[in-house]
Length: 396
Image (spheres, rainbow, N blue to C red):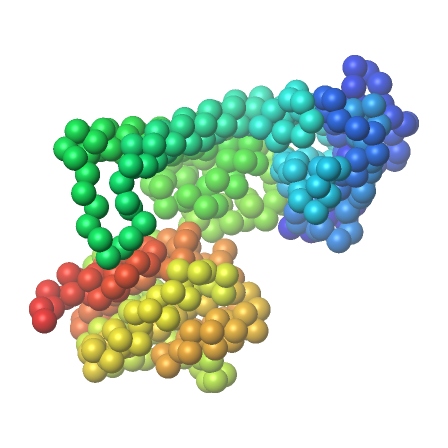
C-alpha cells in the first residue's frame, strides 16, 4: 500500500504544540511523566521512506503533521526510545489513520507503555480500544497461568532430554489443570478475534485479522463481512485481498491437483509445474526465506526422508518470497536437492489463497490419482515421515 503524503498531530485538552499544517490527517499524542526531548518516530508501514518523521517530546506531548493522498485507512507506527537505554526501543504501537482524520492517542501509564494506549477520532477506534483491552487482559492471564505451571515444574529436572521426568500424580493432575486453563484462555482469545471481525467490518483491524486468519471463516461468513465493509475502505489493497479471499476456490482433501496446479521457475531458471512429476506421491511445502521451521525441516529431516522414500515421493518447495534472491538464499541454506517453484507472486497471491496458506511450512500431499490426501502445518522432529506414513498407510 503506497501513500503519497502523511500528517499526524498531537493534541492535549484542546491545545496543540503548534498550528496544524496543510496536511489532511492529524494525530495528537499525550504521555504521562516522561522527560522532554525524547525522540519518537512516526511512519507509515506501507511507505516507511517517504513519510517518516522524527519529533521530540515536550510537556508530555508530541505532534506530527503529514499529508496523505489516500482516503482509505493506512497503517502507521509510532516508536520511541527509552532515554536510559537508547539502544532498545521501549514504546511501539501501530494504528490506522486516513485522509481527513484528526486522531488523539493517549498513553495513561507512567513513562512508556504501549499497553495503556487508547485512540479517539476514527470511526473504528472504540472497537479497537475494546479489542486491545481484551488482548492485554488475555495475555496477562496466559502469562500468569504459565508462571503457575512453571512453578509446579520447578522442583523437577525437565531440562535433560535424556532423562525421564518423574512427576508425582498430584502434581501431574495440577499440571493438566493448568494446561486446560491455558487452552481455555487461548480458545477464548481466538473466539474473540473471530467475533471482532464478524461484528466490526468498519475496522481496518478486521481486514488485517482476516488476511491472516481467513481459513477460520467459512464462505458465508466472508461474504457477510464483505457485504458490510464501508465505502471508505474502497481502494485499499487490504480490500483487494479480501475480495480475492471471497472469490478464490479453496483446496480440500479429495480435490484434484489439475485444478490447483502451481507453476513458476525452478532454482535453475527452468519452467516447472507441480503436476509434471510422475512419482506416486508428491509433497509440496509452502516455504519462506524467513521461516526457521522450514530451515529446520530441510536440515534435520528432509535428507533422510528422501533417502528413504525418494523413489516414491517427489518433494517440492514453493517459495512465497517475492524476490527471487530470497528463494535462492533459502534453497542454498537448505542444501536442497529437491526442486523449487518460484513465481514472485508473494504470500498474498492467488496460489496461497487457493491453498489456504497463512503460515509456514505448510505441507500438502498428493497421491497416485493426483488428489489431495493430507495437509499439515508446522514442523517438528520426523513430522513429515509420520504424516506421510499415516496418509499412505505405509509401514516399516
